[in-house]
Image (cartoon, rainbow, N blue to C red; front, side, top):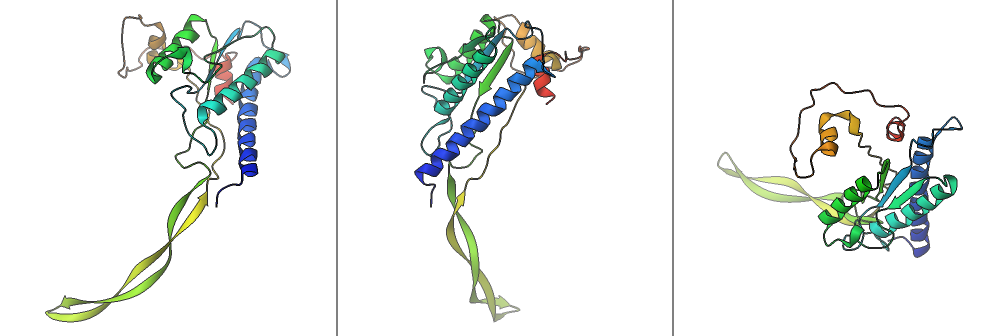
Length: 233
């Protein structure tokens, strides 16, 4: 009922190719405009973050896990950019199957990612993940109704026993192939509201986790900003 090994490999290769092509297109669009390169100063340092790692494998597949696939895609992605843009500085949050910074917990790993990006002066941060879409890898078994069986019972009606017919569903178990595919892109545009701006500029000793209303006048986004160009795709 499950995919044969060759078909599994084919599907995984296709998934990696789609992710790689999508993110490569995203970055290239950030750097180019009608075949004319944007000023080199637009993006000088790029942070590539392969999701999960080490003690945190992420979503599990039939023969691999999210952390491994994200790492493989990230390294290929970075290598392609290095070839296309030799002046671009690329920093990876991890290059092996470890929690970034060799941290002990996921929270520490997330904090390390943010600190690394900020301390490195990153202009653009790209995190690569492979979401599970809420279903089992390859597919899942599911019960479905295949018919109804009539049954009889006696019920009291106005003090008398009356014969009544009712139906009981008949079920069978079927295999549902997981056909979910595609990509998701989330852009965190810092200039969109005060809370995001404050979260970047706040004092390191201050902790602010609540929602903050945005009341001040915001500047319009810079159309040459790679993040803004990606958001408008």
